[in-house]
Length: 197
Image 1 (spheres, rainbow, N blue to C red):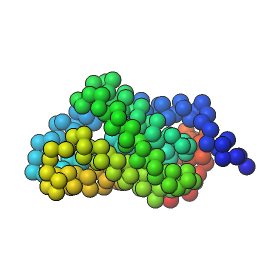
Image 2: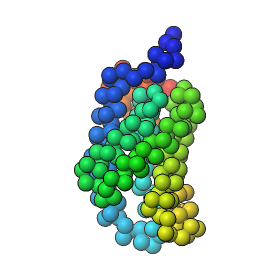
Image 3: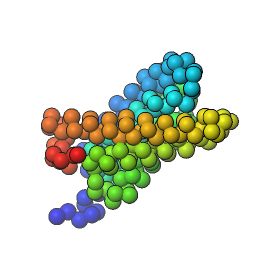
Image 4: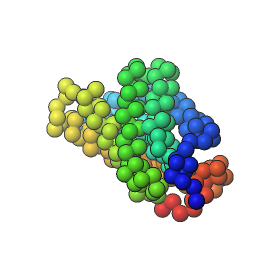
C-alpha cells in the first residue's frame, strides 16, 4: 500500500498528460472564444443564457482531476489552458489567465472536499458545479460588475453552474469513460477503474 505522500506525488507522466490536456484545451478555448463572439446575437433575447455554452472552458479542470487524481491537477491544467488561450490571442487578453486559475480552484476544491478519493459521476458533477461557481464569481467582478444583479448577474451565475455541471462535469466523466477501454489511460488509476458510475 502506497503512503499518502507517494500516492499524491506527481510522476513525469502526470505532468506530461496534464500539459497535453492543457495545450489541447488551450487551442479549443481559442476556437470557443470565436464561437462565443459569433453566438452573442443568438442570445440577444436573454444575454445570460449564452453561458449555456460556458462549460467547455471549464472542462480541463474536471478532466485532469478525473484522470490524474492528484492535488493540483485541476488547478494546473485549467491555468495552463488559459495561458495557452491568452498566448493564442484571446479576445479578453491576459485576464483569462487569473480567470483560469480561479476556475481551476473550483474543481480543485471539489476533489479536495472528497479527500482526492472519489472520482465517480457525483464527484465529476460536483467538480463541474464548483468550477462553474468559481467562474461565475470571477465574472461577477471582472466582467459583469456594471450589469443588473437580478436581471443579469444572478441568472448568469446559475446558468454557468448548470453548464459547468453538465458540460464540464458529466462531459469530462463521459470522456474519461470513453477513453478507459482504449488503453490510453492504463498508466493512471482512471484507466484501471472500471466502476466510474
